[in-house]
Amino acid sequence: MKQVSELKKLIEGYRLVTAEILYRMPDHPKLLQSYLWQDYDLEPKYPALSRFLDFWSRELEGPIHSVRVGTRRVIHPSELIRADFVATIH
Image (tube, rainbow, N blue to C red; front, side, top):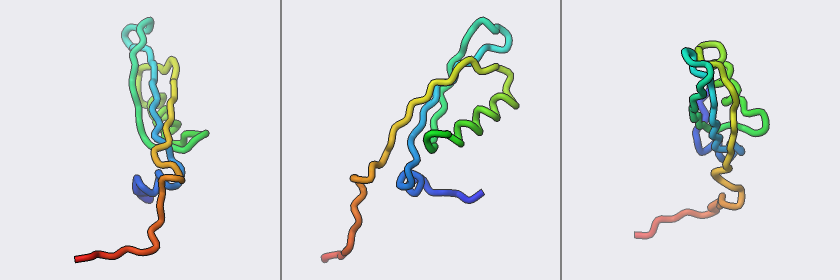
């Protein structure tokens, strides 16, 4: 899989996504535990989060109760400035 730099992701519209995952404890199903997941992802389908949740369902014992998602755009298009000229003065 091709690695994409963090800056390139941010320029292409990736957002910082935080998901609070509530899951049931395997030994005590009436108790809920919280897990926080955070990564850069694309709205509205959240492919990275979906892959993580699929992994969780396949590999981990604690069944997921609910997922709450929050997003934040880290770089806005208005914050990017293109330099037409760069010089060093000694």
